[in-house]
Amino acid sequence: MNNIKLFESKEIRTHWDEIEEQWYFSVIDVVTVLTESVNPRDYWFKMKKRVKSSDGIELSTICRQFKIDQKCSVR
Image (tube, rainbow, N blue to C red; front, side, top):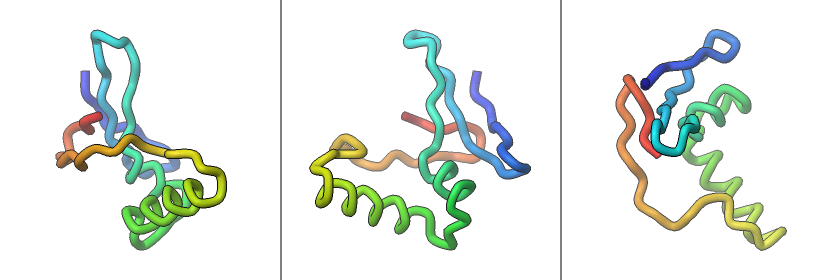
């Protein structure tokens, strides 16, 4: 089951993993909705860098970025 969820009339791409029984959300879509940034990818990149340098916490794993279509997101 793959869906697009709405939050305050804005689309957030999602993916339901039937094996793990949990939802995955597009981080970029969430950042877009919450920050209203004109460049959400840049915002996310800078936020990860800032948190790592100040707290030493890694906000994401080191992996390649997946292409996401408009129908669903990929974890």
